[in-house]
Structure formats: C-alpha cells, structure tokens
Amino acid sequence: MIDATLAALWEVDALPLELGIALTVASGGRAETRVTIEPRHVNTHGICHGGLIFTLADTCFGFAAHSSGAERAVTQAANISYISPAKVGEVLTARAAVISRAGRTGIIDVTVTAGDGRTVALLRGQARFLPG
Image (cartoon, rainbow, N blue to C red):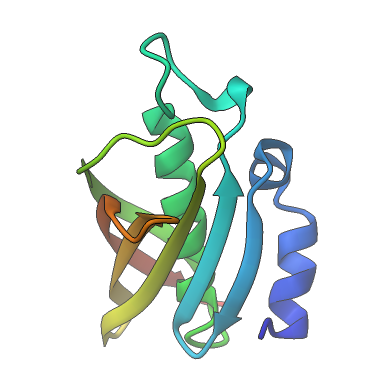
C-alpha cells in the first residue's frame, strides 16, 4: 500500500525512476523498493554497482521516513555494508523500517535481499524530520 501523498512524491523522484527502481510499499514507517539488475547497472567486475544498491536502499529509507508522519524527511547520515554481490537478471528488494523516532531524528534500518533470499546489503541511516 502506498499513501496518495507518497505516490505523488514518487512521481517526481527522477533518479530512482530513471534507474528502474519501483516503490511497492510506503506506509506506517515502512517501505519496500525493487529493481531488476540490467546490464547498465553493473560495474567493471560484472556485478551490480554499489551505487545502484545504495540508491535502492536510500530511496526505500526515505519513503519509510516520509510514511512515518506528516513531516518532510531527509537523510542526515547513512552507512551501508555490502554483504553479497548481485548479478544481471536478479531482482533486488529493499525493505526499510523506522526503528526509533525521537523529536526530529529517526533511525531507519534497510535490508536489501536478492530473489533467492540472501542478504546483499544492510543500511542503517539517520533521518532528520523537517518542519512544514
């Protein structure tokens, strides 16, 4: 489920759309994004570029943050660990959840998995909620 306000935000988020990322869930402090790895997404080693994985996770992070309340949210800090490489044709799914919220700061965890269930990357980020 995607809230109508968040669906409108998604339509103007150009980079994820250009990369082929899809938003499948954004509600109640949770989000899910997906991408199928294409030849244009691989690095010089023939595996999925870390930048695509980070963008998939960061996009999911942002929509989880936005879905947790009425405020706008931005990524204040994020740390990603790459666990397993991914290859062309695989579908990566990022799932994010707000795990802590205090005032204008939130902590959000994102897990990126491949279709076979293995963990590809883990991201923990800090969101800053903006007034207005």
